[in-house]
Length: 360
Image (cartoon, rainbow, N blue to C red; front, top):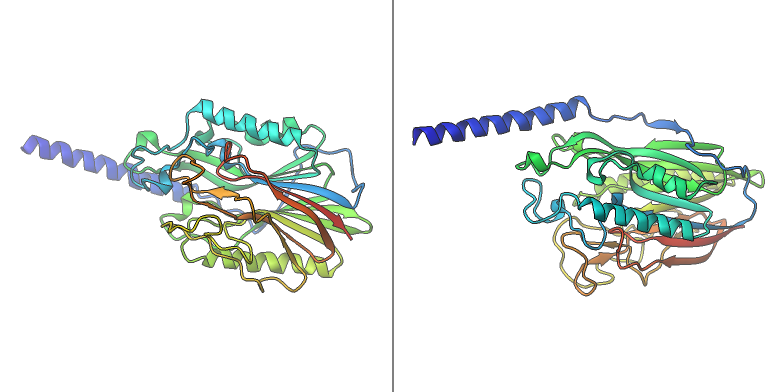
């Protein structure tokens, strides 16, 4: 009995030493970016000015090529402590399958701008594949830039399975454009989680690219707002930050298009728009209709879901879906077409949304 007690005591001691060591390491290495960071383009386009007033966009949260239809995610299922039967990350062959699906879609679509979220630069969960570079090779004549929003040396979850920990995450936003921007900037978004979660959560940001057009500028904003909060307070702070950033741009005569994963529903769309079921967990709030001044436009396809629950692998008739990926446009832009692409979530837990506009 005494021997068993000693073994248990030593086991608990070792676990606590590991756990608090991870917390200490997380605090010391916590990514704390400046409020405004100028970004470089890793690949340049030969086109320096917009050739046409009609432009095409695609937004897509590619889910680090780890959350396709066959995948579930332990954090949404079993939780922080144990993975249970849920995936921490999928097998490498699935990750490569999802990446190829993303590459095939992007290279087959003749769009002017691609705004991607959750693109891994070097992460354990995607077997250290640089997805930013992989996509860049599919678009050799496009400018390419990235903005980091997840830089953690070791995410310790699931905490009771340190041998199966989520590990290193280095990831962020990626913008690819047919035209060369004059400037690309990372803006740190307000709102952060309290300790001990803070060092292991994303540092949300906006990636803002500027393109000259007719003596003015087209300002393109890649968006990926906060998730994993229940009351929506951080999301509202971030919407206010975005408003204070882009409304003055329009007032100066510039054109503004913001698109991506908002982790909220657009005005007029509720969380249960597609399936009237009670889903426990993180709430997807709806953006208030008066959040932005009159004339600003929300562009989305209300017939196609853009996000699914990843508590379990995808099943079309059962899985909860929502619409949280869309665009916001300034009043001086005409929406010609917006369409969600129904892939049955084959390659990500999000789906692309395509947009065609005309600058007035």
